[in-house]
Image 1 (spheres, rainbow, N blue to C red):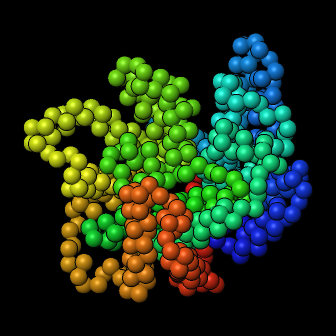
Image 2 (image 1 turned 45 degrees about the horizontal axis):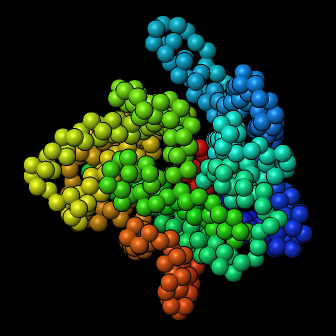
Length: 494
């Protein structure tokens, strides 16, 4: 059941209606039942894995708080981490590990037998596993008290709006809200209207932009060796747009759905393509995951409270692990590695860049300087996205080489851009809807306001005109129907 499906269009109103009607003490039980049902719609058998993760981390949290002996607490934490990471490794990385091992052994002349083992990746396993592990680590560190009620804790891990693709919530935020759900003033006009507005906005950027540009992206990446610079640049920029609208769209719908019910989820994106550096990009992109790795991987490794060499090592480990988290493929690992290299080079060259700006009397606060920083950062990010999207490292490298060597500027004027899966009409729809997205991001960047906050300041006629235009734009120009296979959200596979 995905957010842009008829099933969810039926499921969500029923859940909300009964949520408003059931007695206060039953609210969390109803939401838990709805969340389990939501997950079972993907694969009934894999709900067992979700329940195992819930049970092991809840029990570990209870025992860690019960025992005061440091050694016992460490053993409980270690056991819990091994069990949950072990499950994640088995279902997500076992085939990848065997395949990589076989290739290495084959290089040194050791014969291997190809594994016929294959297993379907449980949807959202990386997200709910990390959320549960964040909780158990927080309990161990004393940041939060262990939840005694297993059903309330189960709702924290399985809360359906953010269960399968985040944001990866922290116990200090979502668990505290779950504990007080019976005290919430659930029907709040502002929460309901703002939440529904966010859901409409998320569906617009997913169905009108992400699913439309995906056609162009798939065409280019499936025929890398057929195209020159213009098409390859269009494919790379298109994928940057696709993954942003796809993932940000999901997060926006999730935040909106939770808001309707009175819950506040963390913001997962903050205009990342307007970042002025790679480190700034990671403060704005997939915020829940980047802060998770910062708090539970980078800082425990030593963070930047150590020698410069060790700091760079910590950065590289964190980003490589982040890449691996996204999928069992060396393309993801290299994507993370590349972002780590960007960070290291940026830190090393920082003093030299500062001196250069002083010597050239560059106006670092000017619009032109900021624009150059934004464009430069986007180019670096977009090159890394090529490795993220490509089927293999070789294809990604070839893609980059052809993009910089197969010059064909005439393709900008002879209509070849309209032969990449989108005709002129569909391409124009993509351009107009992307302009709408850019305007929304500029408002977010300049005024520090979400779309709901901005609309709340406007005249009522303008506010409702925008909402209706988004609704009708999604209905009329959204990619769906019998001949269109509605693609699931990209991050579901992670």
